Image (cartoon, rainbow, N blue to C red; front, side, top):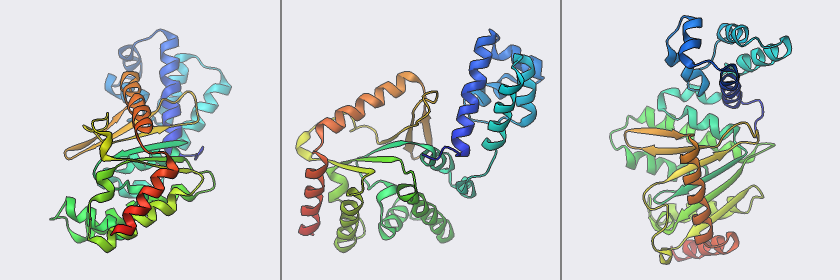
Length: 280
């Protein structure tokens, strides 16, 4: 896991600021009144939706009467959180938050029912998927999306990579995106990456029938820091959703457990995918 990830530092700072406020017994509205700002600003800082400025952190430390050592720690977190990750360059594409979370995660579980997970796609498969999903997309935008998608895959090969667990419905493996030859190369890549020690691939065959993932694909991300809750990413046509509420996390955690139990085992899954490739 990238312990110096600006995304992780931002979430850690948010959690600590919220903890300090709750311990002080003050409401968001009371703190906002002290800072002469709207309560929404405090709420967004405490949920990591907005980066806290150094001045904000300094003023909050004064309100919460923290000691010098903790103040210095919080100021350091604020500085680190405001660093720019490489993914910020792709902010206009709407995927920067997801890339930042994946870069910081210690574990990523990706369930897909229609397409191969982005972290496992070949470049030609990714190009075909992006074009298929948005036929009218300008070529320069497509190329930018493709560049970002392929660069994201580097997290699986860094010095301390997350554990990546892909849960793939059989439909993902049988859909001939880009034609038979392209799909064969894509299946072969899934098998090759699946042999890495930090990667687990499980296929969910059609005969499993109904299962908890039929109505939603998702990415479940966990972090080493026990003070940071997992995050679930759900992608949609009209926007992306990031879930952090305990009730939502528990629901998706249970879905992950059911899907892992229903799927073929990792070794059997790779054999299954290899056979599908041979049949193409």
